[in-house]
Image (cartoon, rainbow, N blue to C red; front, side, top):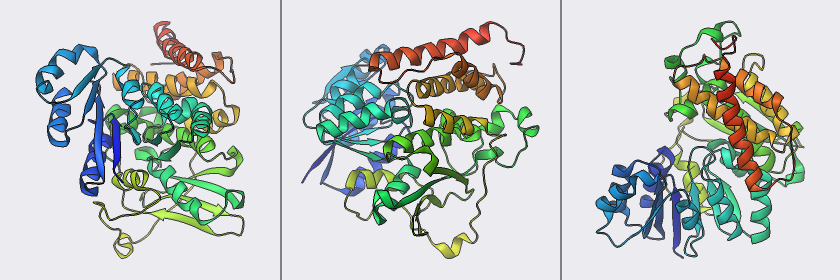
Length: 390
């Protein structure tokens, strides 16, 4: 049976890999719709190759140019932020793969959840910001969520070995980023260039910085709490520099089930598209004899304070997770622009969390208002000339 797929964020790393996966899967999978924010040249190339019926360019400044590039094709072009929502609501869409950085794709995911679609979620923000809301809408509509994030895909796969009530602990693995061996003193002087040198993964600047602060793992803890309906006390993180074991599930009898594979996002992407089936794909096979040793150690929560905060935010729930995510995005932007130091990222997040009054059971509008507040609070705090941020 033909599966029609829409990709939000098709010009990014996940989006381009997803298109490679779909092409390799063959005629049973069709690219129905694509969206991009501003990379119209690559989007136009993708349109020519994969021939979607719909595209969305979310930055309206590029509307005229995208029409000039692809307007002679038999394709419907949607422009502006609501274009992703329109794609998500298409009756023809079977699977919506979301790979849009930040909270921009959240309205589209909620719209798709209400329509009972399969959501293949690659970016962390939707489940961090609105995990409870997404799961409730998915359950009501009969839809489903399949994780594309490599760690959560590994957990999902490992969980197939037992019942949920038999799980003793979920263990998320982390590469630890470039600073995994540094002390609190040493990490104070790291540079932008050093933070962008990830030892394992090739990712965009924002996600690479999140790995360096281990904020990415903090987000994954919050995601896992909602995605697998698991109390925070049953979630743990271990540093695994080789990134071969993508995560593990420990069961009550002492068995630990792990999912292993080469560091390649094509595998979790493919599994989210083909589940519950497994088929041959484009990922190179793992050869254990070529790996040698695998190492593990505990993260230093005094160095990686963002990870420690992530566990606290996961326990608290509500709008604290919105502030946590938005303040981090704003702070990373400042760091990449050279206006703050690396250690200031977590300081800014802590400041926003301390000023915020948590709320539970809020609407999407309130979530987005909280998101906006946190971003502005980062700017206001910096503009106040706070002396510690030098």
